[in-house]
Length: 91
Image (cartoon, rainbow, N blue to C red):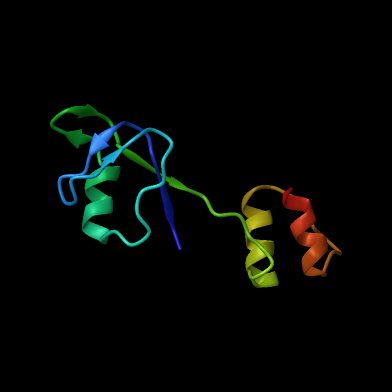
């Protein structure tokens, strides 16, 4: 599940909740609302209000997906097949 971090303090027009910089945006926003907040056009703000947080693989992640993450980050893992050892390369 994707997570989003607040980059600029704002009051959510949908809920009335004020979000401070660094807070996580709600767990289940609509795709439309996320697109609005990730966009660059806002009446009282310059640039995107949210940023997407990249999730790191964990013990629940499939080995295949851990390897894809490692590849995309240029982390060498040849010959390593155990999940715990692959995850240790990320930390």
